[in-house]
Length: 292
Ligand SMILES: NC(=O)c1ccc[n+]([C@@H]2O[C@H](COP(=O)([O-])OP(=O)(O)OC[C@H]3O[C@@H](n4cnc5c(N)ncnc54)[C@H](O)[C@@H]3O)[C@@H](O)[C@H]2O)c1
Image: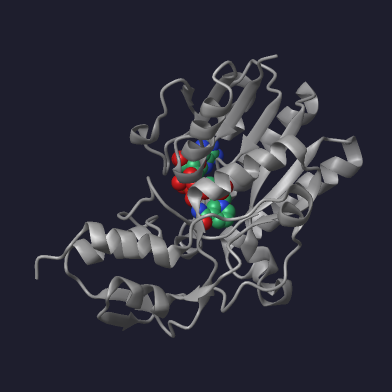
């Protein structure tokens, strides 16, 4: 039987890949995106999905349907600028997500699947309060877990590690690292690395994240589905993979490393990654010889 699937943040980076894979998997399903385009783009639209423009806090008005599954990704999604954008973080992530969770409870949505942030596990769990973004994401994990206990809300929580891959944004203050480095490479500029450069990240291919969250929607229950590459690389190693030179700058370096996290996606669902970031960079460099 065909399903109605809502993807909040469907015009964003990871959301657009989820929609693409959902349509490939079952073209009969009705896929709706709800996005306020605060960081999304119409260039990310996938043929076959229906796009509605609006804030998640207006979900009751904008989504009269009762979806079988809600993938909830439509939130403010960047760490460093979140200090300056705390009002947006509160509005988009706390106010907006409360409305999404309530919508799921009242409508009896089949499953709410949340894209949480792995920052929650870093530095023995202290990182959950390190910046407005991580705080909001960890609060929403608590909220959704509580709705599971209080109201028997069917849900599953995935934790993403740093996404890379097609449709990643390289410009604006919401640009992500690999796309920013690709831009600097193409412009023959030095790679800007926030000191000390030894901070490590588990860069994870966006197609693997999308496959993982869809698998979690199909078979997962509750908290603990981390979706991250096992290998971690320092930011300096990543800049060197593009060929350097590096310009070290002062700034907010974020977590030093990722910390211990639950591993239900691999253990229960057999999920794994298929693309390593260094191979991806190697291919990018081979396909874009520099005009020095
Ligand atoms: N990219 C990562 O490495 C990463 C890591 C951990 C968690 N996540 C989470 O995954 C989700 C997707 O991340 P992304 O990198 O694709 O970000 P993104 O900014 O590309 O996508 C988020 C989308 O949601 C939209 N949006 C934001 N607030 C909204 C609101 N209140 N109502 C409606 N739409 C709204 C934006 O316009 C954007 O299109 C986010 O929830 C993010 O916190 C991402």
